[in-house]
Image 1 (cartoon, rainbow, N blue to C red):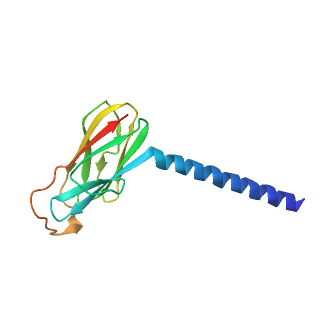
Image 2 (image 1 turned 90 degrees about the vertical axis):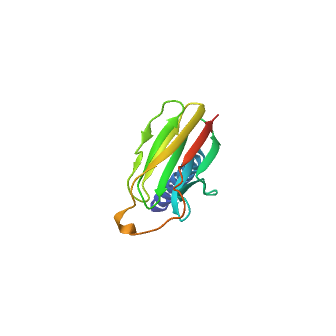
Length: 143
């Protein structure tokens, strides 16, 4: 009897892990990531899904996807929707490093995003950059 209970428990645990793996895979395909970072020339840039860092990016996504913005810059960033179908920005004020904002792209269309940078964090000190600060622009085509 005890052996049957252990076997049932193992089967249930395996089923739960399998369901978790399927859910994780589905989430990975339905979420894209934009990372903002500090750089010496231009102050900051962003990368789409671990691609090259640039001040301007253009990407194409499927309707229903979630776009997560992560701020790894040495200053706060506020995510701003500049154009496109009306949507809700969740936590657009990325006030500290590693904070994130998300948007769910439910409607097809062309979306444009930018950021408003704040002042460097106090702990950064006198970090210098070269040249004019980049204005970040992201164009997202949703099909």
